[in-house]
Image (cartoon, rainbow, N blue to C red; front, side):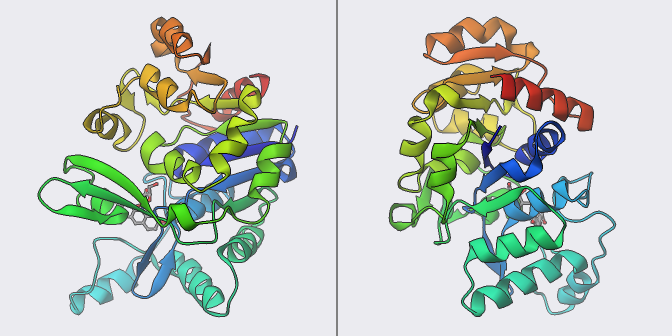
Length: 307
Ligand code: FO1
């Protein structure tokens, strides 16, 4: 089985941890959202890429789902003295990743090159590729402030301000990273990970060519709903969907994904909505989707592969 997985951060990393248990890691390519990327202190931070790398390397902070386990915060504490930006917490060891990435980008390496180097350095066999080497910035139009950068919305405002619209700035001119379209077109299974449909999956789909490539594989595309019983497993997906006029249920997810996904896996808690999902023209598979640990992740990965 050759797998292409469209991935955001924490939820995607958990499913990928399952997929590497049940298939050959070198046969899996994660195509990762970079709309959350941010330049802070002059450093290029790619949160979703790093979350996936750290999780698969077994080094992620299990409490937050992002950043490194056993992290120290001396640099952030020192930065506070100057009144620097400390609302976005970069741990001391995590900083090394951003220093390295920024230096390599400055030398002319592409984000794909650097991501490959970082993943290899963490011992990963699975391929991790950004959706694009070009800059795409997810921006959120929020009440009272207008359009703000993604991390301002997500971390500084703790995604608690009502959103009116989301835009993927730069997407129209972005090109898929090298190999992305070929991977999507040749994979035996295309997986849409349980990530935020609007903040993680849509930025990837908005890179010209990607949605068409996924839609061309629709019968082999299996998506996992990040919404369970009307609520997001993590983050603001449910509230954001409602604010943007999308029903915050598995049916709403099916409606968003119907153009490119043939199958949607929904949690057992949503079994009663299976026929409504199918009413959207998407085959519905009911299975446990909440991944508390490695066994649940592997079980869900098997469901996804069986389709
Ligand atoms: N999320 C937070 O809620 N607070 C933080 O201070 C924070 C810092 C951070 C640093 C590096 C990194 O890779 C991720 C970080 N995240 C933080 C997570 C990140 O903002 C989001 O989870 C993703 O962008 C959404 O997928």
